[in-house]
Length: 173
Image (cartoon, rainbow, N blue to C red; front, side, top):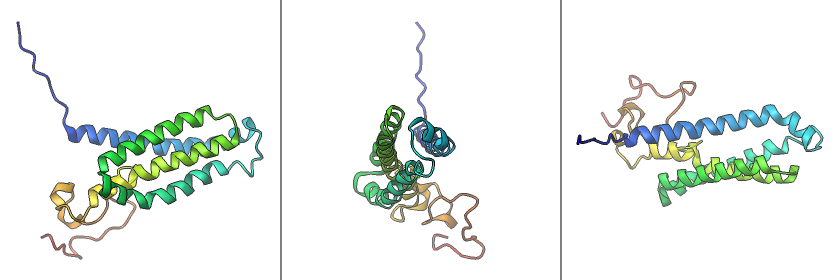
């Protein structure tokens, strides 16, 4: 009998894949809803000038819960908050698909915003928690996976200007 060795997947790879998939879901959701607004208006018999409540409800709840996500991550742990936010977002997404009226759809979109807001950091709730985890100034930059010149700063896209190490020396050098 030959011995089979189980190959274990790296936890870093698992976390990376889950995070990227969660971010993709969030971005795709927002894009799909914006493109579908005229169809939503027609299917739910809502005037086109009122159907934007679907997007507004989502954005307002997102704006309310994003600031809280950092605190929640510190209080309960970023992993727990991220997974809870992902579960809320996924459940709310399913409920949006089952909505039978415009009011239900708006309520479920607000719930989606709660999930995304709590997830954001590692989640834009999915992004704020991730950024809070990566940029927590109480953890050494090496633990955060950031180069010394980025220590103390949340992960930024290439479109966001950041300080350059040559012009702003880091206290970590």
